[in-house]
Image 1 (cartoon, one colour):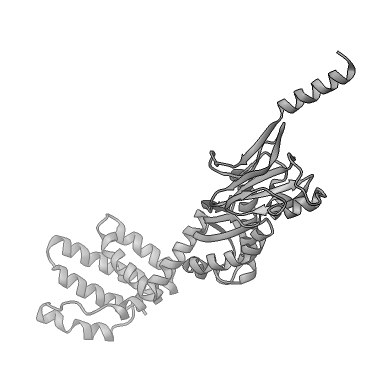
Image 2 (cartoon, helix red, strand yellow):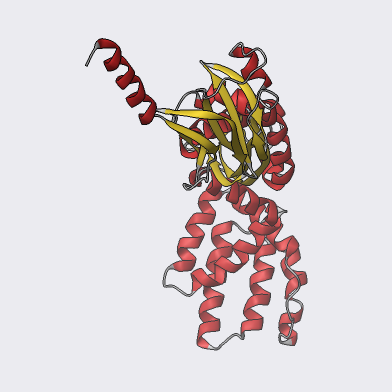
Length: 358
């Protein structure tokens, strides 16, 4: 075999090895694939071949790194008319040169639903109500590829496939960074943020839309599901809410003391211990008792005729110290326990004695 015969044989062999593509299509067999490069090794595209782009797909022809023609959903016969940019890049004059090679990339434009975002660690912001606080937030978002040219240039490149999972870390961290800026810039108190999560989600979406567009993506939805404080700060907030629900602290203290005295008296030495506590309080104990006496409603005054004039006499009597009042209440409680005084009589006398704390 001569040299020319060998060259001809090798050329024929290489020609036979090549496969000519009549139909280009992508079935998206794997979920989560955003970009797919059609396999072109040892393959060339025939003149008049068919390009199939399914719904929720786009296709891009790339010639030696330069983006050429872009196709939306449909079926296309590949000619110089349907590939004007590629024709120009390849310097085809009037005739379509067949077969030819070009990289073909498919992109999924389906909406990627229920993608989750959240703060891995609490973020610190300045709050109008609480000063410096640390916040947590999480939610969901959805997106789709809107501009495959930008996505090819900035994200997927010449990869054989590019998946949603590879992109999510970048998107999630970008969302958290923008959200942190919004927390700091808005000046809205945490309480208002937590009660207006829908509005906050809308504001966050507006801020994120141009950022997603810079990646060739469209941000379809942005939902803030929760804005909260870390557990230790939430407990402090709960205490503050509880104090707000109490309202008048003075009346609450009166109520607590009025309930604590009979409960302490049930235990041996309870009233004496109570007296020590009240005596140690000095002025505070007197103010507390005065406030308590002013808020207490009159009890049933079913006492003996000889005792009916006791309130008037007590009013004229000199003031008693807190220790003396507690000691007297303790003695009366003992009489009540023995059945000498009724419960109503004990309550009446206790109220009279408390009024003497001035």
